[in-house]
Length: 193
Image (tube, rainbow, N blue to C red; front, top):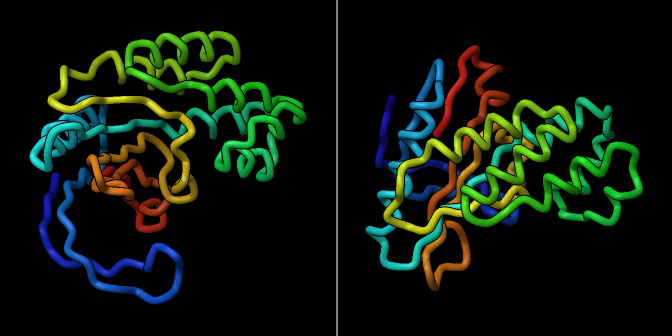
């Protein structure tokens, strides 16, 4: 476990050059279990109210659509339709119904967990049941917590749990994080931050 509060280089949101920005973060490098992920999500849920009332922590899990795409041999185009929330296009693809159902999951954690269990049983997706169990394990939070399975803008970067924190009056997330084993695999480690 590592935390930091320093300047980092980032590519500007609209592409282009790198720029230096201040950033604080927490990382788990190496083996990550359910307890460790719960700890980081809880830390995020405790940090957001420091900004002010009305903050929302939104969770997703990129392993669920990835498992569906693999199980049903869906094309990269189908995953692009998922990432771009084009449910109508998914409905025209064999196996796309699973991604459409996953895309529809949202709301408070208990109802999202129940919906994910139905999806797990219907399509045989173990990751959906695993994410449902994770949601059930979350302790009460000081901020609002929601699930949005369409949260997939960094799907090429994150491959598991993804979280975004939002504050009233701010148009972009004030907190971003997720599991990014695909990036770290190139370095021979796994992690979450």
